[in-house]
Length: 193
Image (cartoon, rainbow, N blue to C red; front, side, top):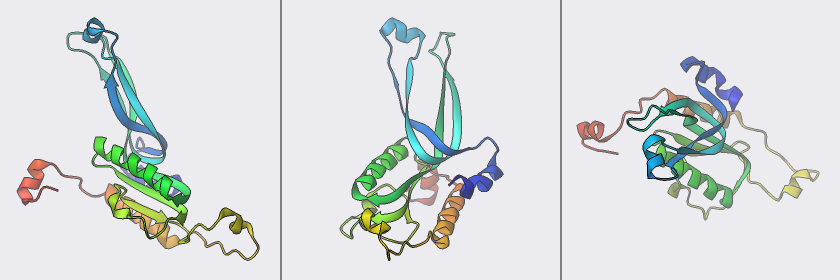
């Protein structure tokens, strides 16, 4: 993924976040008591490991009103998250869908993409119910039992260039589009979402 997107991302900034990342998931505060809370935020940042992200690294300094004591934190905020799998089964899909939903709850402008070599899902799975923006199957092939992949005569499809190209164009179009939104923007159009 890095080599696919590095030139595109570098056109935006040499400081842009690209690659494996520990992205922002949540923030909470845990002081020892009220007196301590008045002088020090005690912010705890929960992070999520991502296979690949394009975004920005945030350096934040926070303090309580009236206190000079600064607390420093660093975290990554993704615009794009790509989860990479050898094969995608229902359990992995559900885990990714939960991660995508949590990401979008905290960062509604982000997109979440799954990329797998093989697919191990049936037609009985409703993909539209998940908050995942897109799923790519690089080999355009279902995952049969792994043991069969090593048998003589098994035909392993190549990674298809048109799939990789679609992924690249999808991400490029997203990164170069306007993310305008919100109530006032929607009100001008008369439709909000």
